[in-house]
Structures are given as structure tokens and as C-alpha cells.
Length: 450
Image 1 (cartoon, rainbow, N blue to C red):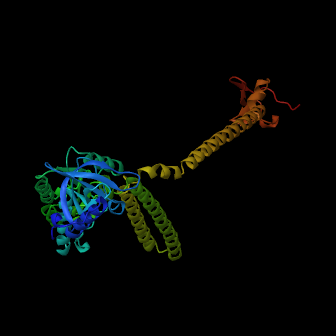
Image 2: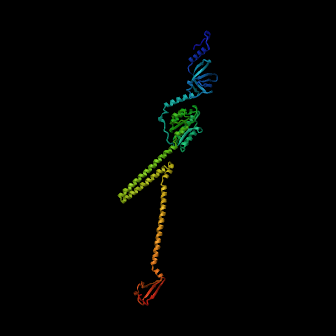
Image 3: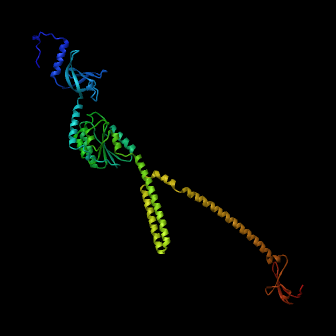
């Protein structure tokens, strides 16, 4: 750049021309620069352009960032924020103010971390740590779940709440660890390795709540990524909010947008499982009934065959064989019912409703009615028989010789033979007279026919 020698120049500049020339010199001789400082006097008018000052301990410079550039940022600057600008040097001609025209802005710390994040992501991806072929399948119904997170954070409360709601019977092992700070990465690695050494869990949840990129940085450390990759247990990452992504998310076997979503991924919904069990129960009951029906049909057919063949020995053997088959079928039915008893508790009442209890009750009532009817008929028949017996006794009593004797008559016998004619006795014969009470011995002194 050749300096202007004002002492040798007779040309007089206007203020407008001077500011324009200075702006041209500044914009032509300085390329895009990265400048670091603290924002102050930030203003965002309705035009959409931003105006602010960038300062350090000794100086400050005015800055402008026009709408086409600032709309690309995912944050809004504020006073006191420490940033890095990618800007051009210029001059605002209207006031003669030296200024920077910013084209890009990053928060100090976030930008460096983002660059480091992208570099590590690229390197680990090239090494194959993100490949799907290394992803381990999650168990459909884990026997035990391990959670690697802070024991005092909101994430563990969210996870335990979801697990309790979805499947409270699955036990949970918590591996407490730091999730923020310089010592957190090594702490997380130790927790992952400890969980693998214990080998008591089927799946691990690696989790923490939301935060800035710097807060989440332990989950972007390479040692954590390697520990996840080398884990023999499947790992679900639930780190930060849905918009947050870490290196651990890419290495993990499954990424969840939040800690709560991670808990949902590793457990089935108990209500869905219960519905499936009830459907299986219905199919099982139908299958058992069909088996019993087939066995009954087969039993009926076999009985017909036995009746047609009728050899006693063969009939006996076949009957015994049928008894064994029936006993085996009953044992099998009982075994199947016992195996599913726990899962079929809700259906037990339905099965009870299908039993023929009301029919048995009706049959009992009918039997009681018939018994009472039979007793009534028997009493009636007995009364008729007693009446007939009484009538017969009366008739018999009327025809009895004893009744004749009671009217004053006597029965004469000779040698225990009843005398009917006078010619059956002679003078001097001894005869006996049978009275109503007692007997008289007599001798015949006279006999004459009437």
C-alpha cells in the first residue's frame, strides 16, 4: 500500500470522497479476518440487521451483521457474550465510523469444541465404530437393566419413572457416575467396564439430561466411544434433548432422543404384553378343547371298533390302553394349565363362567323334585295297601269261625274231627265242644235227627 503524501497534493478532498476512499482502501487491503472479543451495546432493529460493539480489555470496534448472514446462526448474541467473528474491515461513510462487517459468528469455546467434535466424528466413522454391522440387538424382554448416569440428576428419576410405568417387575441396577467435568469421561468408562464385568444386566442405558455442548463433552471423548464400542452388553444412549447429538450416540447400539425415550426403548409395555398373552391364552384354550374333542371322537370310534370285534381279551387291553391315553391326556392338560396359570389369572374367571355349574344346580333341583315326587307316590301306594289290608282283615274277621262262636254257637268235634251230622255220633260217644272261650268235654246220651 502506497501512503498518500498530503503535503505534495494540491487536490482538496470532500468528506464524502475521503470516507469513500478510506473505505475502499480498507476493504481492498484486508481479507476476511477472525476476530475475538466480547459483545456490548447489542441492538436488533426491525430491519433484521444486528449492530453491536466488539471489545477487549483495551479497545473496542463497532460491528454490523446483516440479515442474510445472521439468519444462518442458531443463537442470538447478547451483551457480555464472548464470540469469534469472521468479518471484513470497512468504514461507514455516513459517520466516518471504522467498523467490522461480520459474516459468521461463533461462541468462543463452542466453536472449538464443535470443530473437535466433527474431527473426532469423522475419524471414528472412518474407523468403523459407527457401522451398523457392529450394532448389537436389544433384548425383547430384559431380565435386568443397567443405568449409567448421575445418581442425583433428573435423568435417573425420569428413567425409573418410565420403567416403573411400563414394566415394574424388571429389576434395575444403577452404576452412578459423573456426567460433567474433566473427570467425567474416565468415570463413565469405568462404569461401562464395571457393568460388563458384573454381566448381570441384559442391556445398559447411558444417559444424562440436557446441557450445552461443553456440558455434554464427556460423551464426545474418544475413550468413552471406545468403551461403548468394546462393550459386550448392548448400550442405549439417551443423552441430552432430542436436538443434542454426541459421539456416544453414534457408537451406541441404539440412540434415544431423551433419557425417558431410552427407558421406553429397552422395555416392552406390560399392557401390550398382557394383550398378547391373553390372545395366546385364547388360542391355547381353543387348542386344548380341540384336542379333547378329537380325543373324544377317537374314543367313541375306538369303542365302536371294540364292540364290533368283541374279543374279551382284546377289549380289555384296548380299554386299558384307552384309560392310559385318557390319563395321559388329562396329565398333559393339567400340566399345560399349570404352566400358564400365572399368566392366565385374568382369564380364570372367564373359564369359571363357562363351567356347567348352573346346569348341575338345575339337575340337583330336578333330582330333589323327583325324589319328593317319588316319596309322595310311595306314601300314597302304602296308604292304599294299608287300606286294602284293613278291608281284607275285616272280611276275614267276618268269615272267621271265632266270629260264629262269639254269636253263641259251639263247634263239636269227635276225635278232632268236626261233627256235621247226627249220624256221625252214637250213644255213649265222647265229644268236645269248642266255645268262644275254652272247651267242654261231653258224652252223648241222646241223638236224634231234627
